[in-house]
Length: 261
Image (cartoon, rainbow, N blue to C red; front, side, top):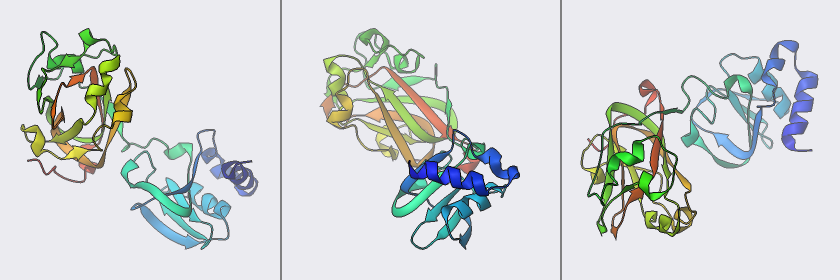
């Protein structure tokens, strides 16, 4: 049986009825992972069961970290979904959360950018920038934006106002031309010059670009306050995007202004 399964059995046996609502099929367990920066209480307990019981009975507790060697119990006021950038690897530590906090009010959420004004560095025939925000999930060429073969092609969408961007997804074109996205960089910020804005995640690798019609995710760590989302390739290439989608966190929880102003 997995550590999570053993933990659940022990916690059910020891937990009072008032905290059993925390134990659901959506319960999440991760070994050698920790949520950093959101600890509101630290204590030493004899086992993860005791740590879990204390968390489940505290309304402020959203998740907890437990170190099996030191018996250190850390109660968190957020979950990995609410703060994905601070959910990191750490040997010997276990992370737990339950359904009651798995999707808090300040968690990352999708918002529609369909129909928002979009531009690109050039247009190949009628495959305009707006095709990347038309709401279509098709990966055939007629539903994708497409630039000319040029030096440093770019694409940009105007959100109309600042949002706190946590994640960007690109739906790549189907077929052998999917590899063209290799090296693409996603950025978010308030500057209309795309290369002046900070990046989200890492440039697209050849392995990421290879799958025909694949989806590539870019995590903004930390989240970025931005009006513009852009994609550029800093070399001679063709930039083609079938759809771009975005996730955000509430603007009042944003770490701060982007450095691209």
